[in-house]
Length: 377
Ligand code: NAD
Image 1 (tube, rainbow, N blue to C red):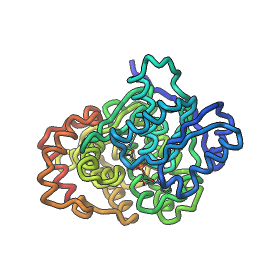
Image 2 (image 1 turned 60 degrees about the horizontal axis):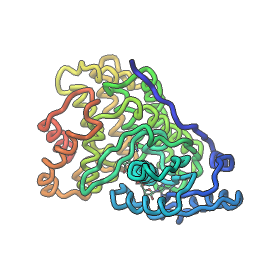
Image 3 (image 1 turned 30 degrees about the vertical axis):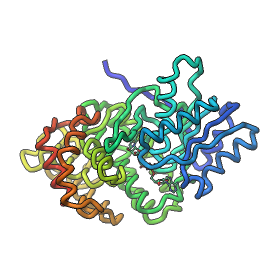
Image 4 (image 1 turned 180 degrees about the horizontal axis):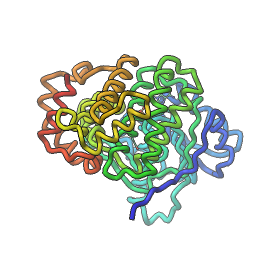
């Protein structure tokens, strides 16, 4: 038996934030970060709460790639004034922190007799899809741990593209490539289904069509809306089909060297596509044929699996170049000697990452080491 879970109610469009006027609450915890305060996005939420006479407290110092200490800070705050509604407003880091806090508090205080609060996720990047996933990524020392539990799913996701317009070009590129990576990995995952495939195909088409426009002109709300919806659809695909080793390698690279998550995926993605397709060999794997199908959907040459995979690889690299992204890990701040020194540790983390088992080709330590070295450049 297979299953495909659809959970949060999804409100989308340029006035989607107004959905907050209908959510019942007496006491709210708003989880967010300093960028949301600086860009006036947090006040768009608090203005609605104030107008409705709802009491709220704000936790606005969530850091990128939240760690255990961050989660513990959030737990103390939530425990001190337990809300009946939690609103997470921010990128994947903020949403994941809120998820982990709600989850950990329920686990550690089961005797408190409190109901799980309603949980509304409002993404302000078009990247992780965390608003519709049962995943939360939390850092412990230099390792990113992926928590997976259906109770992490928000109850409502609000996709308002006006909240994404302030994302600067470099973060638009990083997060947009994360969307593409979610779709590609879900599409070739060993747990892919007709349902996740339909979403992934649509996502890949929308990313290639709209991401460059978002990067060039962040104020183009039509393109922003298409990318925001694509990000959410990719989340729906991978929360069901899971992911693959681009993510496993990216989690370790991000955990050890603090490379932003989407950028790490962008760096590694083409190498993993080539390896999954066996591009240097027969190029006749099931994944190769699925990549070729995507190339065909993008109107790229794909008369054979090899031609299709080659077209997709060129399209990925061209998209990165168009957005002036680093080509290899060498072009980021990661020093070559440090990279070699930490390589075994990263490979170990990637091998035990929860995204690895659903990769279409099972890797060993040697294969992952080679993929890292090729990506270093
Ligand atoms: P992020 O949340 O770390 O945000 C990146 C930067 O963008 C931050 O400095 C943030 O303040 C800023 N920012 C966010 N929205 C903005 C806006 N509207 N205007 C201006 N600046 C804005 O980045 P992300 O890529 O969204 O999330 C990455 C995290 O999510 C990583 O920890 C990654 O491992 C995790 N992740 C989670 C899932 C999941 O399913 N839970 C999936 C993929 C990745």
